[in-house]
Amino acid sequence: MQGKLRQVTCPSCESATKTLETRRAPDGHSVRRRRCCTECAHRFTTYERALPERVEVIKRNGSRQPFDHDKLRTALVRACHKRDVDPRELESIVERVESDAKREREIPAGRIGELCLEGLAELDRGAYLQFAGTLPDTAGASS
Figure (tube, rainbow, N blue to C red):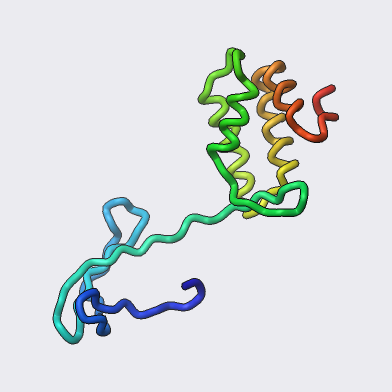
């Protein structure tokens, strides 16, 4: 229920509750609240967490889909098949692309390809050419 705040109700009798104690949860990324029902006095704990930002990829045909970290890493690993490339370097490229996408909250698929090519160009020429060959516009492969 985005945009509207609802009062937390008791899991036992569904009446209104009041907050007894609020503190940061041990994970550091959520808030822990001890609550008490105003009707039945049932006590319980709730945790509040911020939802992760959703990054959207704008495909070439105009459709949109969520950014998929694993899908991008798989494509890069495929391009580096039988190449002497450290997987940590590929993960670094994926993280760079993802952080760039998070700043904008949406990213065109073509821009993802460009960022991957930039990273692969520094890493391995063969992997760069292999990845460029999978893109619809391979003009960048000749550089």
